[in-house]
Figure 1: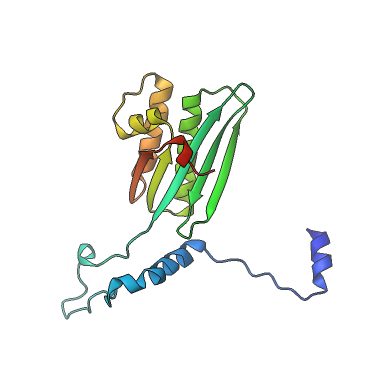
Figure 2: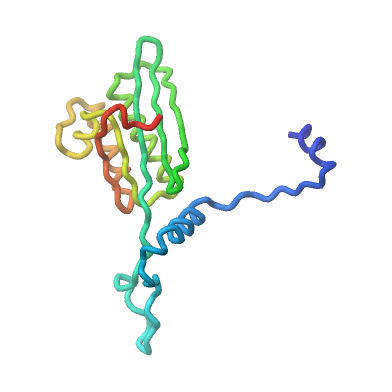
Amino acid sequence: MLKWAIELGQFDLEYCPRTAIKGQELADFILEFDSEVDNKAIVLPEPSSQGSPPADEREELPQPWWILYVDGVVNNNRAGARIVLVTLKGHHLMSAIHFKIYVTNNDAEYEALINGLKISLEVGVVNLIARSDSELVVNQVNGGFQARGPRTEFYMRCAQRLLEKFGSARLEGVPREEIVR
């Protein structure tokens, strides 16, 4: 770090931290779809003499949907998980997990989902569509299949609790070819 400071010091550069992307993403989203609004503005009604309207009567800005792709992989040599969070502008935020312990394929799929949901919450995502190629995991979390065994049930409950923390979230099953790499 010091080496770079010395090298770049001669150019009189000044460090400016980047502001949060979330606010910029929302502003760009509203501007991008502004022409479809047909001259309607998102404006709160003027306060009357009785005060401001109750919170449930106020219009809220629509929250856009983010997409999360998760995939767990186990083979003879290693096990891991791939997580791709797609932002509103189509940027891919990628993360990978390497397991140093033995895990089953279903464990890897659940680990990918749970860690992807945690990342999404940390980024501040409100509405999320999570996509996985594991039919078993999708159906267990959505309530279509029963979880058998304490470990699988623990994973399922953890994923369900994380999904409840979003404003709106859903888990969809997709073919393996549709998982973003």
